[in-house]
Length: 291
Image (tube, rainbow, N blue to C red; front, side, top):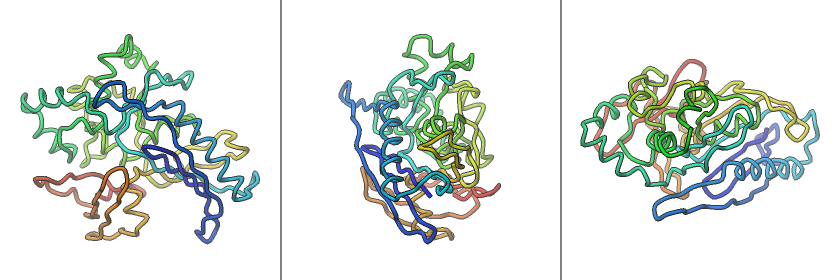
């Protein structure tokens, strides 16, 4: 199994054997772009090139030949937004990274307009530039012709998992752990929220289809000689929660990375809104969401 861990500063790929033991590994960093103070961008094409190359190096390190690879899994930096042309697969702007603060003023406007309670209730999140919705709105408002292209299906958006899935499989899809970090996803119903899409001016057709975190999300197309399913997708912190076997309610973990993230499994009921805490989807296995 090839695991692709696409992080904020680099991509790590690890090949695991049948016993779950690491058999091959590779890592490479990519450029960070800071066009203005508080603005953080990535070149999505470079992220794909680096991830593709590192995957090949890990497969070579493990001595995997065509026919031996069973599946690919993806975990990714969350909230970062990529916009691309679905017909060419080319990015239409640099990716806006989760750390980017350019939409802080817009979040203040929405808060003053009394929108935070509705957003908090539907998404489990607070109104903050950290999440994806105001980044997508900014792109739609500031990139020439992008709004029209999005309405016509000539521009699509996605978090990094969706971008990698598209490049690997040609599928425009995401999973609930990533979708729930966009401010556009109703965590109770498990789908994109029409009222929030309208609030941020995001055409639903421009967003990925939400599929279960575990199962066949797509099939790779001649990926280093392998045509195999992408069988698992989860945002990095939710993936870490699962990887630390916090699969029962009450179990939790803390990750120290670019940031520090505490997550606790809350089971299959949406947690009540609590001051200072976020509610989010941990994963979906079969038809069941875990929070």
